[in-house]
Length: 518
Ligand SMILES: *Cc1c(COP(=O)(O)O)cnc(C)c1O
Image (cartoon, rainbow, N blue to C red):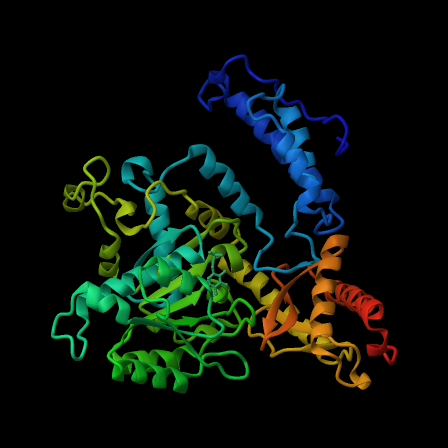
């Protein structure tokens, strides 16, 4: 098939009635053909991508999407897929491409795609056993498997979620409820009311922690100043001494620390907070510890770096994102808890769904543990991944990208065109282009603008994609390496492009800043 021309696959025309579109025992042949046609389009696209992106702009794509008459269906599957080529597939951002170096998006493994195809067709819903027979048991095994890898102990439990944001929200909801159940506030009497307590609750996280912690605090009705940031060391890891001081300060001021959120793999710096020392500080002060391992969870299957997570087994709850470092498609995440009783804070009963009686009857209704009701069987993707590939093969892939990031860091460290920030413990690299080592200090705003421009120009060309962030108020660029296919040569190629774009920007705006050739 040519990408723009007539598709070679035989896709059935639109059945005469809506009923013909239902997936039933009478339409399995259509199912086979239609889904195969879609798979063929994606496969052809992926085989032909030579860049991670086309550089398309929202303004270029929007008219085509707006012009579609959603009340007037096309003649059939092939026509709809043709249209989709133009509106989506041709210009999609391809995470499998080795020069996609931007965000925490991984290329996905084929066993997980198989799982995705199966789970969406069977369409189990994980809320109750009577909508998910078998699936519930598979999800529970994977929660137990993950808990064993973490070392959370015999009472541990958890549930799959839509992502790290939701996992963190649920962890902090549990922490809030636990704090409300236990808190004693000096000067407020032995049992403060919820109204007295909520404004006093605090969450301690490092300055490099994830913004979903702040979002969760707001959703949970906490005060705007509820998230207290704790200083980090030079490698952007939470400073345990600063943490102990903050806990002490909060307690002295009559505030209640409902949780410390340690990050095992910060989004920008790939830094892992010192978990044993943080766990000590929490244990000494009776504070709940949540470990956000949305990114670093891949180390759970690493054969060479598992020790970087030492101390995680002392957490009260843990967030993992299989869709970041387990090479799973979005969405696939979980919240794990040390004490299964903690999940009771998420348990509500409805006569039409999960009556309280079901608990006594030992019917495993996962909705009792979840913030969601109807919920995908995302666990199946990880299940088939483990059954087909096994954990070592997954961990080896993650180890490879961590090695690649170290290599990229070394390249940048000796390259006079760039300044590179602290070396990541995982697979990010934060750096920025500078107008040249021997040229004297250049204007900070100009350098910021040149780096911003370089990133945008690179994306517009589609030749590579990098992310951006700020460090100490200055504009930096970031690689997040999650593709084992990315080579040192890919990294070098993208760096040359970044430097060329940035130089062009400075040449056009302030040529004097380029006083020497680089
Ligand atoms: C990505 C990330 C999250 C949020 O996870 P989503 O799956 O995007 O919702 C939370 N914490 C950290 C450290 C992350 O990197």
